[in-house]
Amino acid sequence: MGHKHSKTADSCAQGDTAFKLFEYQCTTCRSKRPIQYFYKNGKFLPQTPRVVCGECNTSVAVEPFKTVEYGCPSCKRWQRARLPARPIPLNMYNVSVVSCNCGFKGEVNVGRLMDVACCQCWQHRRELCDVWLEDGDELRHYCGNCKDERRCIAQVPKKKGTEPAEDLEYACDECKDVRPVHAEELLRNEGLACCTACNWVGYPEVHPRGHFEKLGLQREAARRGSGTPKRQGSGRSGKKVKPEPDAAAFPMSPVVP
Image 1 (tube, rainbow, N blue to C red):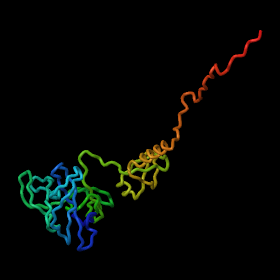
Image 2 (image 1 turned 135 degrees about the vertical axis):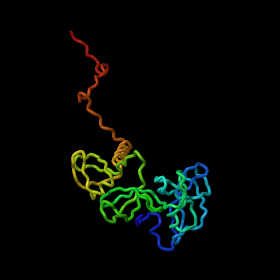
Image 3 (image 1 turned 120 degrees about the vertical axis):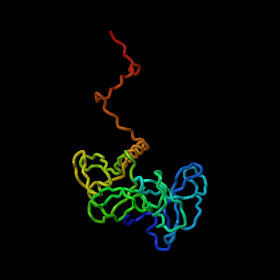
């Protein structure tokens, strides 16, 4: 499964109390929410968590669980299971006895089904990873394309039929057009981007998607707050029409025969 670097607790010193992410289901609104489950010296501590649900603001005692995946050896399909939180060593969550819908019942290896991307060639491969691996965590993994162990990034698989959208954007230095770009593409090209509108190539200043739209709205709000009138167009003729003077303002002189 590879050596991982988790964002939740691996950075703590030996003997310190840390946590792993579990889930709970609120008994009132039935929503699933994340929860921290604490451990020390590689073993979960006895605990009876009580939380205020972030969905319905109800105080409830909860029973945390960890959702894992496994490959059924009988039907050859990926299945899910819930492992209840217990005061046991962390490594005991890598194996569990499961019951599949196909009728299989037995002990299998469990973990998280993730898309593992090599940071060198950026090839993706879906694999069963460590049960404590979180979305965006780094791990050392063997890349079949590079034929060597590489630094990789694990991501939660996207749903079927959904294409990954560009998460960054930049303003082209040449045509000044705002262009979207994938973070993966920038990493693969070491920060180099190519504008698809004018073929400019360079190292742009990138921002999160929607940055320039938000900047334009802020400028528009500031302009309205200052009371600066918006520029009017010149119209069809491009000339201003001078109003006719009022006849009452110019009295007529008497005519002398």
